[in-house]
Image (cartoon, rainbow, N blue to C red; front, side, top):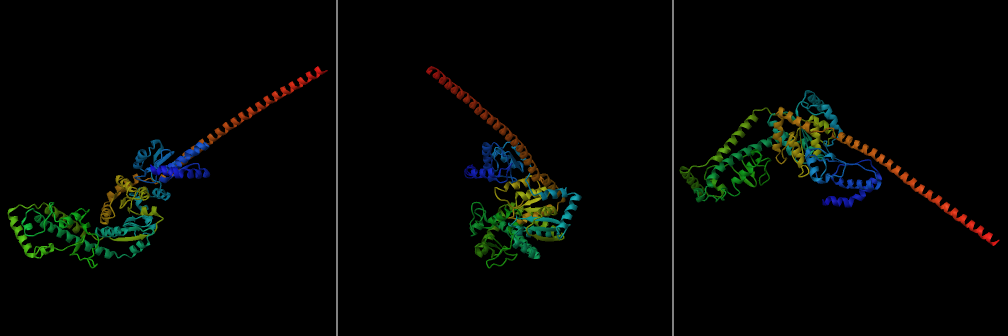
Length: 534
């Protein structure tokens, strides 16, 4: 509200002056700060000149929009989604008769390519895709193709995402090529071009092995901790560190386990090589977690020293717990929950090991001007939640995997994709989750077909053309009405002029008659005077 008032006070007069100098037939706003002010200026121009200047707002946001977009004094508002239409009704009080849901305007090239592509999942669509891949001189025309983007500047977590995509595709036997749009980020492009992908695989393998050992150690350590946390246990009496009322050692194993289990997957516990105090990478037998080092645990007398307890006290604690277990039933529910997880991880790893490694090529790109063609060549788009990019992908029936969004401004765009059922959101803070989702889709042809169909249903490749035609029709109608109004004003002005001229003429004749009467009276008076004198 305050922003709107400020804009009207500070900008309306200058905007009105510019409109009067330009003398437009129609005004179109594509920015939220230029909606209410031009609408008010057009109203004042109409009052002064009698000519109506139609104004239209084209909302260029997709799933959410700022309230300044919606001015109910304009002639029409074009929105891209039901969510924006609801906002226009609620925030701007825009009536339905002024609102048109028509899609987000995108470049004409996407409409052209959408017409050539047709159904992406059909034989003709696949042939067109292969033809475009050849025209773009891509390394392969028969591999699954993933297009990764991070905006024109190539910012974001592209590098980490590409690493995890490469590892995931190789591990799961997916032959693919990864097209990375680096934009103006030459450093990223050069880095990807010269990257040692064998080293990336080897690094991931070592991290995963270290993570698996960490999980095993934590599972064992938790079973010990459960016994230590029993109030009044012999272990506590023997000198084992005290526990809180919640049953966990402050800053100990349980907290570490909770942090790991709160992640999307256990393997995300460690995602990058962790340096030791000297700066070197840790071996697989020693993994650092938030400043603490987890060593393989053993039930010997030295194990207690790792916990700050001397060897004799630790021996006494173990003996006391052994005696206690003979007379007390122990709840192993948490241990039983951990075992199946380990079994599932083992089975999954074994299944992956039996798959032939996928052949994956990474192809970094600079600033791309043929985005429509690259989207046709791709089977999947991985990108941030920009409204234009999402609209372009939907126009070409391309499934979308979103990795980031600007809070508030782009948050609704994520809902547009997810609620439209042609994509998903996986945060770039967990690149392994992005890679897993991409691999799951690429391995499921039926799901990819469904995603593509839903994307096509949400797309509007001809939105820009339809908006221009609609605005053009409205502008022509108002031009004709303004011409008729001008003619009517001119006719009235002529009638008023005639009426004024007639009144002046009538007044002149009456004056002449009065003047003649006076002269005749004077002459008569002079004649009478002369006769009397004689």
